[in-house]
Image (tube, rainbow, N blue to C red; front, side, top):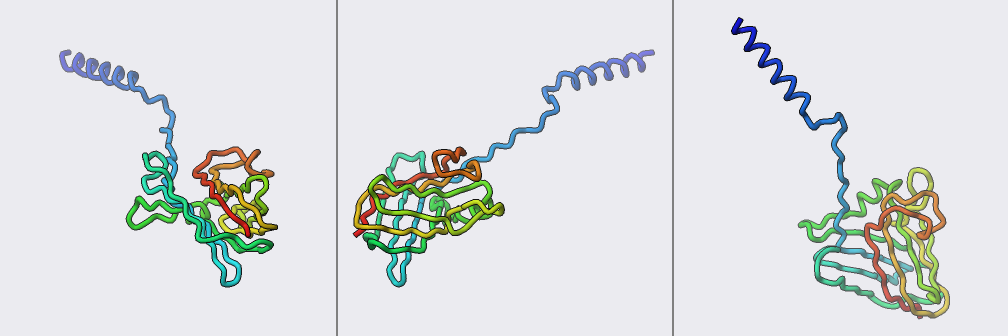
Length: 184
């Protein structure tokens, strides 16, 4: 009798332990952390003429140091450049090329180029995601007459595709940098 009583007590404790579990059957939520992007490099080439725009935030977005912007020279008026944009995490050693991930997950990313009003620049994406929507890590940049102004590069994660531009793209901004550009 004592053995049955012990078994029943063990069974009762086991049932209580199982019923008190806080597992409600839901799968754990996996958080997809944003990549750290310290460097945005835009390379523009026309023949032998190359212009590089670079933003380097050596401590990442959340660090106290402001980004350092460099531009290797002015853009030539009335010229079409072939462009690429590269995203790097240079906190890692060796530096991690985030561009590779952006291109592998092209349906989840899009690069937008926004010239300020009065800056005579237009851009056109030349690479696309699997559905034929613009990705923008490769593009053409065409300058018009001489002008000066801000040129903003924005990488969006999970934008609405297709879209008509940054204003209706939605998604989250992975990185956004603004260069003061001169066309002469």
